[in-house]
Image (cartoon, rainbow, N blue to C red; front, side, top):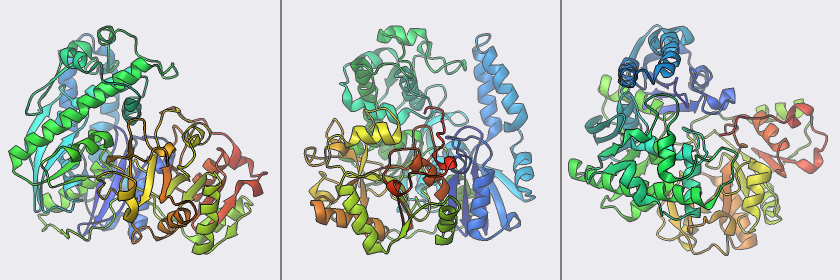
Length: 582
């Protein structure tokens, strides 16, 4: 029994393949097309999933799309009518997209996949809720989903029990906390649906001095987590911009341009909306416990990727345990859509093993040694083959000597975080390492923080009250800023990944080797890409990124490439690619 879940045509298109209720593969389309947040039909991602399973499309029993297009179209048309004539341009652009593709999903799926079987549609928030609950270690749980908007729903409280996810409470568009956060993302000069994590990273540089002003004018939040936006300050319902002139007038300054100076004012704005986000998450999750009576909590939707809010939540909650789906955005909803088909439609029993869950992140494409050698030989790359002991000893020495490492292993991560398979690694011991990696390697804003990856068995020595955090979805405090200055943020916290030996034997060995040499079991771990580019998928992607930046060493499996030995690399690898800024 194979089921294919698909999300597409908004942003972060993706697919997920289940075999008898177990995830075989999942991937975002952007990793193959190299277009960040690619919204197009995930043709290449589907091809990968089928290849991974060793099947063709004729083996697929059911395809489930992650939302209901006609409900979404109805909401958009009603919004346009309510804002006429100001939304005419929005109508003109929307109607073209909808009449061309979005209203014809079944026909597109059948045509693109040459598929003749049954197609189902899950609701958007139902897909998010199913994705987090059915990948969680819980047999029952409260579920909170917060994002911009699905068909018409922006926030939901649901109950997960056995093989069922049931929506209990929901709040509808336009009163969306996700859109509120996106409004401040735009105001601070970042791209909506892409730069929200930058706003989160900027917040610790400021103080929440505009918090009361925001709550007085823009939004009110009830003790049940109900959000009410004052719509006169926003323009997302007219399709032109998330914010308007009145929004800026209240705050006293114009919106920052993407390439504008980052002043303390915008840092304070970021800090203020981040503080409100943390308060909101505490309120809505507390209310969800009253509604459901559950001791466990699952989070999903784009707002669930706010690791700082998640970190504050685990310190201030009555829930015994919290699970956040690693791919909580729209891409991850493809997972939920597939599970809706398997559990809700086909009514299969829940396959639930509390302490033996497979990894929920390493679901993407992997490459053999033959694949790697073929690329290295094609581009005449000088390399050495090293066993695990040699590799870890040499790379840890390079890290100790302030070298930057491209680390490419195993299957690609599913979701927005690089978790040790498509990572850039660096030593956290140097105070200027953060600036160097941001500017010379990632080619991005200097304020952006880096996440530490730490040996799980030594995490308590470096981070306060830490719990297992395999997917970088929570922040924890640390008093080790002097020891590891380049991966502790301005507020004394870090978005930590804890690493265990069973799941990551080679990376665990590398960090252990670094620890033996430096008495530090921590490395910087950031995604293997540059600003505006998706995380690398293939060895060729990795080589291009390596030669277009100031990385020093590239590790592809057990193959080590030193830049100093490849100064005359092929022009195809060194040609600078200009990506759209994120």
